[in-house]
Image (cartoon, rainbow, N blue to C red; front, side):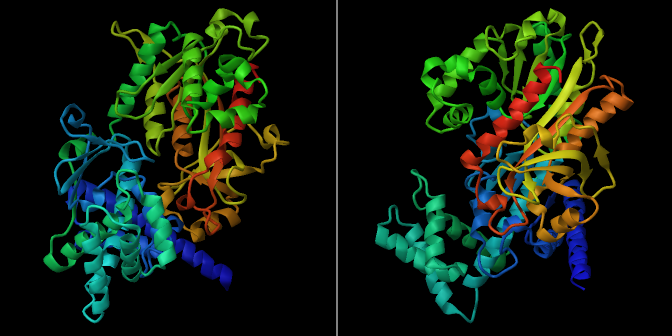
Length: 561
């Protein structure tokens, strides 16, 4: 009976996700909607039925604090104060006097137009829109929960708590006693303990705004009250230019053409090219760090060295490594297309006496590979960028150069369904959530490559989800326990493989023998309470798996394995 019940709950959750995405597409085509009005009702109901793990107690009366921390790291500062939120394309705001606001955990340009309006630039495709709308739906649900408690006609004590909070927020500076008094009143409004609120206050606290948490809750309640009592409902709009451009690979095409021009300018266009989707430090550090830092790190093993370079206070060391790398074959290509994906090109003919491959010097010059390391794409953007890059390069005289792609390697963070943070996942196929699309492939990496390093390694299917913030235990448990043999979830794998397969097998713009490598390390386990993405980042735990995967990818590329 329990199996049937769990299966039914998983089916309900899947239907809720489907309703959310259909509704988002409809609202996008419509051009605007009011999240707490009739037009936003379907999104709210679907999110509350789904109850994603990352949003914790969103369906309960108490305020969800961990979820607030998570989404506000990914939304522009001050958005809780805005009645109008306008999603735009890249429409020239970067050349204006508006100050750009970039969320700490998500690279997107945002602009505060006036006291009531926030503009958010969408340059990374539909996944970016889904991500933002999901977070905003959660934010407004929490806002209304606060407002509903304040507006309770029967419980006047909450109204008094609200007035005391308002007085505290309007003071320029609070003493410790005044702050704790305000938090005490907030505990009744939010349905949370004083201890929980003190912990949340510390998380939100900044040097410039030590009482940001009080201000945040005040504005969420204030805007929610305006919705309830004055009919001044918040509105989300999609600019006409955004609706016209979306899906046309405008930013991906600019990005790909810029990289191809760089390859041409450095006479690298005909050399074997190995694409690596990773970060902007692990490949560079693996190749150059020891040589760049010399005797100062002689007594450190590899893990100690990489951990040192990952520390926030190691800016000077990182700068030394980068400067050395750029003198020995690394070309940094900062993004100007709006895709927000920087690139590093490594001309391995110029790495000097870095001891990376003893057989390298004997290679024919034309066969010495070039590494093309691109920063992480976001969801559907992975298809847009790689699909454009794998197309032949057309020069001004009409001559076409087919890209000499030798391999595509993807390293990323993912949610794991068995194991813990830092453990590894080696996929044999990607399933695209919500569709019948599946992408089996021969992965050049396997679990045996990573044995003996103290990390658990899982092999199986990965599911590419439409949004990590929309997953709940019921869906994930079904995928894990069923014959799909799903070991984890991420957002880009199927998009990358779709681009590679269409280029190699259908368009024939690259070799059908192109090698692919996929390896992920666990950023969270959404099946474990307290281990979701909202519980915090990996920190130093991510150093070991990141560099282990990087070393295995480089070993295969450079030693022709």
